[in-house]
Amino acid sequence: MDGAYLRFCGAPQNRKGIDGLARVCREQLQSDPFSGRLYVFRNRRGTTIKVLAYDGQGFWLAQKRLSKGRFRWWPEGLQAREVTRTLEAHQLQVLLAAGNPGATQAAPCWRALNVPS
Image (cartoon, rainbow, N blue to C red; front, side, top):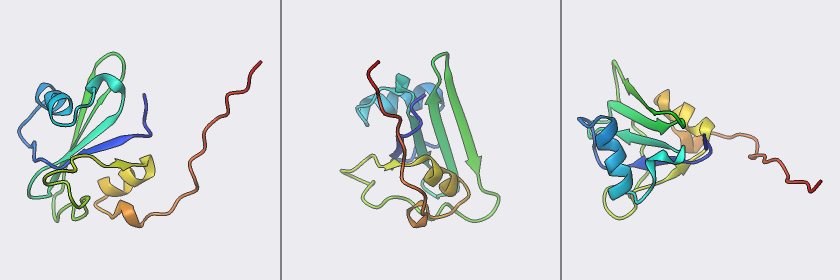
């Protein structure tokens, strides 16, 4: 699973299930829902977030609805032209805790080097 790329969709997709959200990924985001990326959707009121992912065998759909309050942070500009934003994995954790992922600090991302044998 390619967990480094987290896609946000600004359009409210509150009533859609796996098939509907996968269609949004293909048609509105021009992205392959089978890619292993995580797709994050927030409802209009900001009380619910859904995360869609494909793990190679099937789709996962996780949903979090806050008991009180709202997910106040959401990338600006997602209402019309800019429909996706990329976040790091630690930023998603902060978002799911109803925090501001843009205010987090973490060590730089590390990637393994491809060393010829």
